[in-house]
Image (cartoon, rainbow, N blue to C red; front, side, top):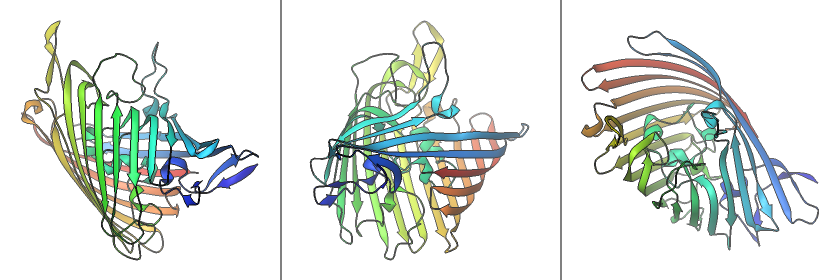
Length: 388
C-alpha cells in the first residue's frame, strides 16, 4: 500500500528524533500487516560556478555536486528502525580503482528506541560533532559548508551511537549524544588497528524546542514566534588515527592521537537566524615521517577556526545570508597549510523549503601562505536543489 509517510509513533508518543526515521512527509509504503515500513527520498544538487585565484587563470565549474538516495523506516515494530543513504556523485564516490569501487555508502545504520527519549544505534552514520556537519548538506543556507567544517569536522564513522533527549516545547531541556567508533571514517577497510574514537556532545535548549526540529536546518524558515536558542559543545578523541584529519584526509606515515573540540550556537526568531561556531584539532608532534624516506612527510591538520553566519528570510521566501570564517593553523604546519579568512554573501529563493531551492553566492578568500604572502581569491556559485 503506497502512502505518504508521517512521523513514526512509538506507543502513544511520536518520535522527536525525526531525522532518524523520517524528515517529514516522504513517498513510502507500509506492509499490510504493519510489520515493515520504507520511506524513500532523494535529492540532487546541480551547481555551476567560476573561481579566480590570484596569479592564475579563472576556472569554470559545472557538476552534480550531490546526488543521494535515502531509505528509512522500521522492521517488525517502530522501535526497530533503519536508515540507508547512498551517494552517487563523483565527489561522494571518490577515486575508483582496482579493489576500490568507491565510497557509495554514506549511512547504513540500525536503531533501537526503547522509549521516546532514548535512541541506540549501530552501524555507519554521522558522528555527533559540529552542528553544521550534523545538519544535512541539503539543509544549508549557502551552497556548501564553511572552510572550517571542511578541515576540522569528524564526519561519518562506524560504531555504536547513543542519544538522549526529552524535548520540551517552551521550557529548558538538554540532549546528550555519544559514540564509540573505529576512527578511520566511512567504509574504511585498508588497514586495521586497535585505536578507537570516543565522541561526546551536549546540546542545551534554554528557550525550549525549535519549531519542526529547526535546530537541524539552517535559516528560520518556520519564522519562530518566540526566540529560540541552542548551545552545544562536543569533544572527540581519535586514538591512533591513521589519517591527517582523523576520519578524513590523507594517510599518515605514523599513527597519532587527535583531539577535537566543537562549540556551537544557533539563534532563530521571526525570520532571523544567527549561528556561531568554534572548531579545533590538536595532537602531539603533527608531522609524520616515512620510515623508508625521511624526505617524505605528512602532517595532521592542526589548528582552530571560527565561523559567524547571519541571515534573514523575507515573507516572499527570498533570503539574504552573510558568513565570515577565519582559520588559523598551528606553527608546526605553517609551511604546509595557510591561514585563511573567507567572506561570503548569498541570496537564496525557497520554492518548497529546503526541498526545492535556488542558491547563489559570492565569496572572497584571503590566503596567507608562509614565505609567499597573501593571495586574494574569488569565486561565485549558482546552485539548484530538488529533493523528496
